[in-house]
Length: 139
Image 1 (spheres, rainbow, N blue to C red):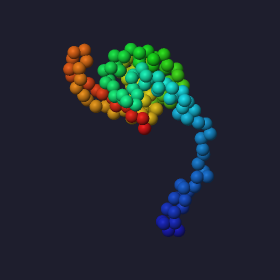
Image 2: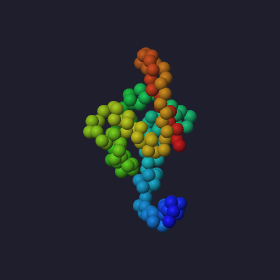
Image 3: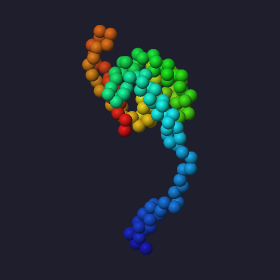
Image 4: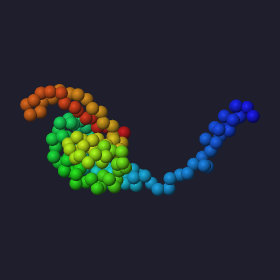
């Protein structure tokens, strides 16, 4: 036996799909597709995102009490519809504004959205400074 025949045998073993077990149970992403889409659609309405307006400043999200209330009211649904084991919000017991931002970001990223952040100068409450702007894009 030479080295080439050993490599060919290894490649043939790796390409053999008969040994690979298929998952019979659908993932949460497949099983709860409609519920997840509805949850994201409701969040889009609260935040004010649509096809024409897909940009929002992080300052506006942080100061929007409706987002915090909606997320806190739907924590059980989020745990049911999404695989949340590695999300920082559920890893920490501290519930603060930063955690809601992390939860919101994780929801959108897991729902096939891309979030781009940019620093832009804007005026809120007659204070002009640089703020973070989030641009949402559905993949």
